[in-house]
Amino acid sequence: MKIQSQVLVHLGFGKYVRSDQVTAVIPIEEERGPGRRTFVHLQAQSDPIIASRAEDTIVRDLVQEPREVTQSRQQQEILQDLLVDLTNVNSTVRRISRDEGGFDIERFERRIREVLEN
Image (cartoon, rainbow, N blue to C red; front, side, top):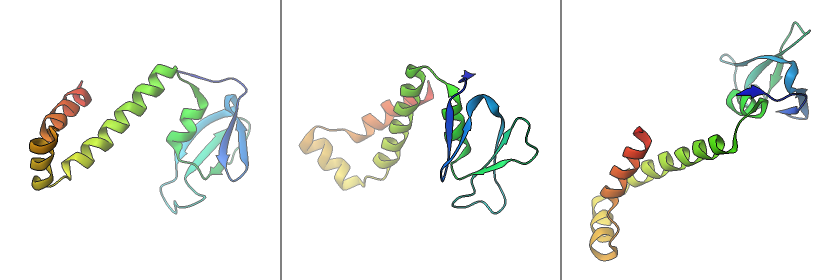
């Protein structure tokens, strides 16, 4: 991945920086909260800008990422969310789903785990 050149990156609350001026993106650990998520260091500035967006979101906007990579990450996140939801389904609903609807939740959980492990 490489930094996009001369693209404005949104930091939240109307703050924007040029992508190729960013030298570091560091999560705020102390006193972190709404409006205080990330320190963004810029070339030729000694003090960082405080961003209201999370560091991973800012980094995603900074780098040029192939569409396939973005889609793959989104699909993995959806599968992880689905797996969490499926594991919370109680045994009665699982049985009814399998016996009456032909939807075997355990089988889908196994398949999702296999995909996420690879």
